Amino acid sequence: MIKNIVVADDERSSAVLLARLLEKEGYKVWTAANGAQALNIILTEQIDLLITDVVMPEMDGVDLYMELKNRPSTASLPVIVVTDKEVFKESFSSLGVELYSPKPVNMEDLKEKIRKIESYVLAKRVFHKVVIIGSDEQVLALMRQELERYSCIVVPVSNVIEAGMRCFLTNPQLILIDIYTKDYASTKEIIRSLRAFEFFKQATIVVYANYPAEEALSGPLLASLDQVVKDCLEAGANKYIGRFDPANFLGALKDCGIG
Image (tube, one colour):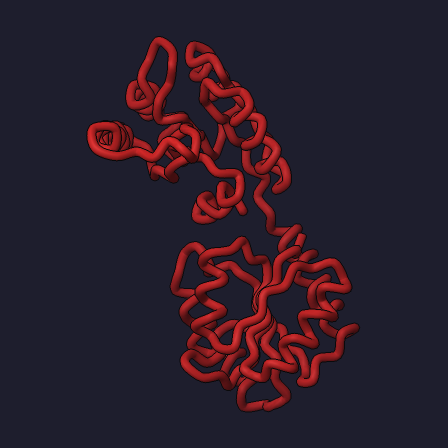
């Protein structure tokens, strides 16, 4: 479902008016005066839709669209272009844009286009199966809650001995593992053992850290973490997403097809 929207328009009054109309419909809206501002918001927030004008300073709508499509993390972001000019429609159509809205925006027309995007995204959604391995059951519960918002099938595992069996039973597309396990095997050993099976060669394995925000890592602790991360990546992990933070957890998994 679309919840978070960026409206990019250098005409401040138009952007604010559209934002207020969308907010009345229950959406959370960010406004940007140009493509550069819009891109920064999209890269730092969990955005579901971009509504953009064409002619803007610093970065226009075309350059913004191309920048988004050239980035794996934003390539699938839906875009609605606001314009009445046929020449702009032709330019964007050649790039793959299908949805346009007249200027000034007709709210009923815009809502219909948003519903069309939602139905299309739902039809294409991949229902990921995810196994989460970690010793902190509260963190596992928070991760599960976030992932289930995107219709993932989630299996949390707090006992490392059961990790392999749960992975075999679930056949997950994504495996999340705490970088510091407190059991009979290290995280790198778990990753290496999973990668030894053809069954898990195509699975995405992501490692994360679990420590309180107030415990800043520095000196020897930071060096130790860097080495553990390196060991996990060499063992076969695809990426390290840092300390678990519910606010940006799904954003960190965007290039895994989630969020």
